[in-house]
Image (tube, rainbow, N blue to C red; front, side, top):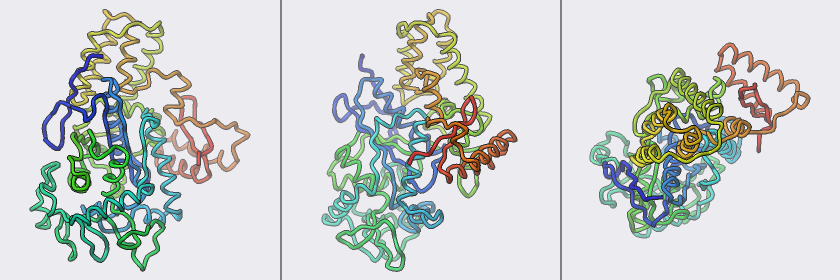
Length: 484
């Protein structure tokens, strides 16, 4: 394949730049993953679709991609909601108390659900490494120790902190005004912190509170701060310098600037060459939030009769850096469009495979290489479908070529498509289903018919408690035993 330039908007430089890999033909890609104390929502999924499209685009261009998405299963404190990730309760510990389950069991449950969700969105988890923060405690301790040894960290009563005044150009990602932060515009300064922007590298366990997740360290028993895990795991798995780091725009001011400060001091190199961030997804014009009560997950999308791939399609119709407003009407439109595309592919293009049309491939390649311009790529799909000058067998080959990047499932058979959309699982016969579980299923179906989706969601959770998964397919609900 002819080498073509790939352009990305780099949050660090605030410019669109031509990509140049650290090692020819290879790409090292790190993406901030979920904190597995709760179920991820559709807004979270935009980040993983972004990293998936990046990986697919590089593969389309002939690169080998080494991709890492971390799993945060310790150290992310609740104070982050107010701009301070160093106070409040650990989210895993808090979830353990509220749900009456161990932190480890909660992490396992929501990690499994995370994998289920991203697989439903046609993200190939076999091509990605998913390190857990709790698996890299020694690496995090070693990095904190190095920072302390060279004078960038100091110990106070509640932990070990990074001294941001020591790092030149702290806040350079996104052009953060540190003077404003120091003035107290965003972070409340605690007495022992030297600077408002200083952040915890290691937190001490409170002697008055039992923690399930804590480790011995040179400074005492405790647990790592949230930011150190990404620096330690990216270094361990991808090396001291990486090509691309992705995440939501909410990570720019604190989390990603802190990663830079830690990594560049310890690694003695520029940490990341290209930073890519996706914009937020709003719901009905409002930002998603638990307090508002408008969080939507993929189960709810399926309960409404939509395919998760319809949500993927909807995301791709907007550029990743553009804020998008989710509505059920918009999803219905995307669902209809994707259904039409699949029907056309199966019914009209059920022919022998031809040759990829060079003119359309050239356009598609230019669009995706131009900062992942998926809206233009989607529009080109429809232009191709209407173009009678291209034979059906060549259309089929060309659409399949496009779909290696778009990931809309055109190359899936009917049976595998059901598995892809709904997570698979062996369908149980009626005789295998306990009477009480069957009653919950029937009640849920009635709720869905009455469009009482809140009740349907609650009944789905009851099925989870009884050890079952339920998926809504085109031929009715599919019940399966939950995988442990």
